[in-house]
Image 1 (cartoon, rainbow, N blue to C red):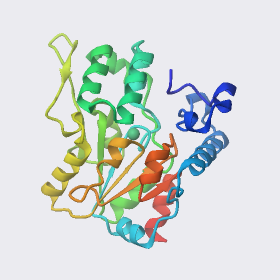
Image 2: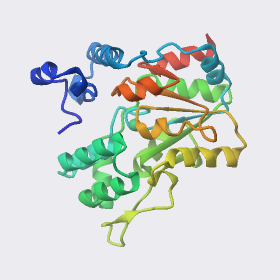
Image 3: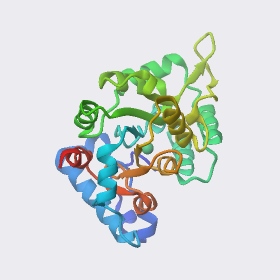
Length: 283
Ligand SMILES: [Mg+2]
């Protein structure tokens, strides 16, 4: 299984650099402060070694000015706002972790249409309402370090905070509520159930149920609120593709949970600590 397997094995360390660039996220047991720092430093070294020009770990004056004057900031949830990759974790809970992790890896690489990957993963998982409730009770989401402070800082300066995720509202709504983010600022997927609570499908009308969905969600946010300056923060390909002339003006990559060299190389600004973003608001 790719995700949640802990730090790279001796065999992985011996593999060519290109083959081990996306080292897996930290296991729950490995999350002491020093281990997290070690993990982040390791991610940083891997990305720096591979990116041709090096990721932009320092923001340019233009990017800083945009960050400070943004009307809204949209956060990816899995492996960005939270340390979890929730679909993989729900799948593991349901006993189909390996099959679904392989599908997630393909989807993150951009080789499968998002809607097809989502349908296939949910089709394997068949999450019932009861099982999803059990999962949430057993695995409360873990916010990435620094997220509550950043959300509070943005909201106190009048910057709107949105969550834009290919994950599920059942998981994300409680997170949003815990930080005072209104639910109409959450764009995510809805799992549908039959009358007996068994899995029925997903709501295909959600923007984020389709490839290109994050950009579409941001266009909707701009239309609905009249915003023109929006930042997308995330770790993956679907986050990067939300940076388009008509959607997010800049993309900030986050490599604190899992660092992806192609994303790092393309990001307008790439950080390993959420606190760097908070500090930069007032610096
Ligand atoms: Mg993500």
